[in-house]
Image 1 (cartoon, one colour):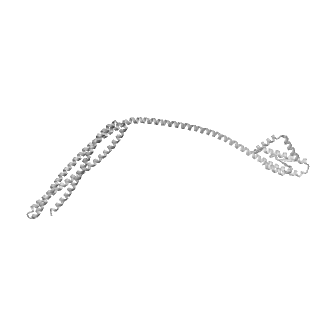
Image 2 (cartoon, helix red, strand yellow; image 1 turned 90 degrees about the vertical axis):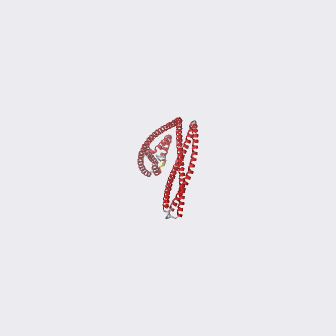
Image 3 (cartoon, rainbow, N blue to C red; image 1 turned 180 degrees about the vertical axis):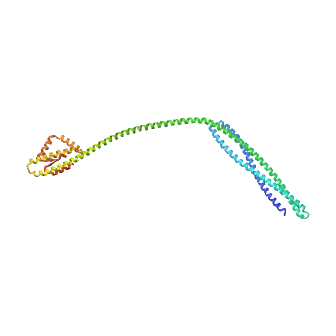
Length: 397
């Protein structure tokens, strides 16, 4: 009953040792692979360093454009190397963490083994002291067998502990080598940075000379463009001044025309007012004439009663009435502004016609006893006095 817990502890220890062995094997494989890859990388980096040195010498002898391209390419490779360095640092940290964990597990397993060994020794001592009276011979044989098996397990565990310590030392050696590789790589990166700075300074000096030339050319082009633009703007200003002068001249002409039109409007206004006053006077004259015509009509009606008298008396009365009406109508027409053109035409016709015809027509009218309209010169028979008066009233209006 006392040996059963010891067996369970031994089995758990064996399981833990198996797990630790598997982890150590995995770590050995990964570390060996990493060492191989690191050695290959070191060789590649050495080759690359030699190639870079040759390329740098070639690049120094190259023109500035190719140097710029080479600098860009080196910057890209440097970024890649920095990325690889970051990954390697992460791997180193992970390996260091794994080694520390394995060391802690080994220490814990060693302590457990020592504790189990002490427990077994105490148990064996107690069993030996009580073996004469309490334990039979078969039990003593089983205990001796268990003791031998435990001693064998302890020996195995000690051997495995030694192997684990050796592996830990190997891993620490690999870590030291990796740190040396990191230091050498950092130095190589620093040298690359210095070379890049030197190349950049050389390129900036050459670029400064070329940039000064290009800036001078660009300034010349810009000055030429600005001068051309200034000439165009000056031409536009001249054209605008000419257009402004034309507009001013046109406005002056328009102002003169407006003044002339205003004067004409004033003249027309004066003419209109004078014509209106003349028209009013003519209207008053027409009313007076209509009154006189009514009076004449009354006289004609009275004279028609005495028409059976002598013809000489009738003709004399007709001529008298004709002259009276004609003088009144002519006076009215002279004062009327709307009849100026017709007066002129009548005067021209009267001036152009020979006096013989006028005398003949007057003598004929007086001989026949006819009445003549003072406006249109139309003759009416003295017997048609009503029709003559209506015509005169309509024609003089």
